[in-house]
Structures are given as structure tokens and as C-alpha cells.
Length: 219
Image 1 (cartoon, helix red, strand yellow):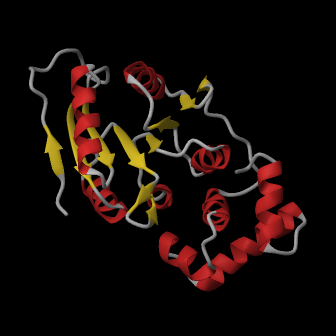
Image 2 (cartoon, rainbow, N blue to C red; image 1 turned 45 degrees about the vertical axis):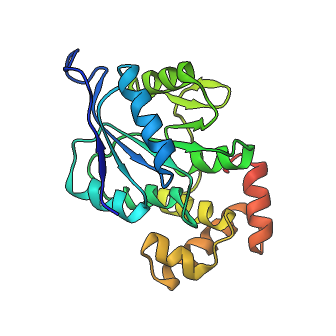
């Protein structure tokens, strides 16, 4: 499915690197919701142009060839795949825009998984206009926006970024083969990362690993 670009209906106002953002990428497979959110971004003066795609693959390809996006709004559930799979694919980019997860689910484990994966914020689909505006303003200032309000984006974990990628997918129930596919890693590499994570936590199986990682606040 090709990208759908929702263009602004009024001339540009403001200056460089301030609101409205020049380009925003919205990754969502529900067309009506995506159109509505794009419209709100324009109406509230948050974005000049909103490009909408429906899959992680389309988003990754677009971001690989266009470095002009200043914000990514990412649905967590996309046609049976997790939107969080996009974040590890951005790790190799020299500069990546902040990514905010949008989701109809606001449970604690989902929010923690989003933050652990490297998202800059989390916005429930049930949120109102004021929350949307507050989130965008916070994120472009370099702050995090999660349920409970604006928080500093600081997180000191004894795992490498790639190990965190593996842990996040493990917590979502991905078998090794799907982790390999999502992160473009060999099975040997995934097993090596899992061994390092198990060692760090002092556990012996996947269930213990995920449970203790949540207790520790890593997820």
C-alpha cells in the first residue's frame, strides 16, 4: 500500500524546527483513524505534512530514503505484526526522528515495552486534543511523554541496545525464528544475546527472564 500524504490546508506559519513540524510520519493500518489524526495535527498547528503508511516495512523503507521526518507516530498493532519492530530497524540510521507509540491498549506492560524499545512517548488512541498537543510539544523538546505525564528520557540498563531489542520481542512471545526475522539477525546471534540477558538476570529460561525483567522495570 502506497503512502498517503495529508497536506495542510493553510500556508506555513512559524520558523524552522518549531511547530508546525514540517513532516510527520504516521504508521497506522486503520485509514479512518489515520485520516482523523492527520487532520487534528493540522488543525492544532502541529504538522504541515503528515504521511501515512500501513506497515512496518513501508515505514522502514520510507525512513531509509527520506531523512526529513521530524516525528513518527506508530501504531503498536499492525495487521498481525508489532509496530515496535520498527524501532530496532532504525538503530543503524545516523539520525532518527523521535517515535511515539499510539495504541488502543494502555496497560502497563505495553507502555513499558514501548519505552524499553526506545520510544520517546506513548499516546492512547482515546486521548483528546490537549493530550496530543502536550505530547508533541514535550517530544520535540527532547522529553518523554508517557501515561502519567512528561518524564525525562533517561534509562540506565545493563544491556546493550540490541539485547534490549531481543528482550522486548521475547516479552511479546516471539520465538527465536521470529526474533531473527524482525531484527535481521542470525539464530546464533539471537541465542548469544539471550544467553547474555539470562546471565545478567541470573535466570535459566524465557519465562523467568521476562518476569524478572518486568520486576526490574526493564519492560
